[in-house]
Image 1 (spheres, one colour):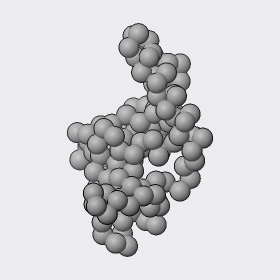
Image 2 (tube, rainbow, N blue to C red):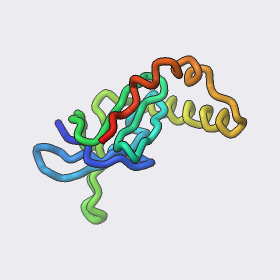
Image 3 (cartoon, rainbow, N blue to C red):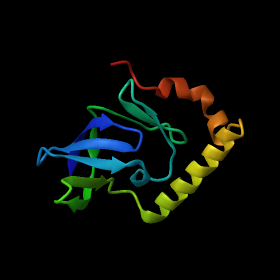
Image 4 (cartoon, rainbow, N blue to C red):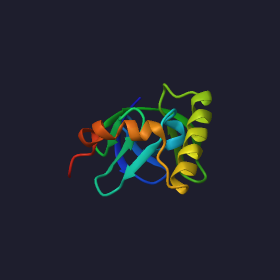
Length: 124
C-alpha cells in the first residue's frame, strides 16, 4: 500500500496512507538493518550504512502491522522488513551508541564519510 511521509521524529516516520488518508507510524525498528540519523530541521532521515534517505513528501510502500482502535494508533512497516533484520539493527544500534560514548567512530561510518555529503537531505 502506498503512502506519503508526513513527519519525522526521533523514533520513526509518520506516513499518510494514500487510500485511506490516515497517518500511521513506521518505527525505525521496522526499517531494518541500518542505523537512522534524524535531521528534523530538514525533515528527513539518513541511513548510516546504505546512504538511503527518506524525507517528508516522499512516497513509501508500507503495510499495516497493528491497529489500536481504542488508542487511535496505526502502526506500519515496510513490506521488505523481517524480524531477524530488526534484531540485527537493534544490536548494531547499540554497538554504534557504545562507540559514540567512548568517543570512537565505527569503521562503517568512518569509511562512508567521503560519500556522505552528497546523500544529505536537501534544504526545504
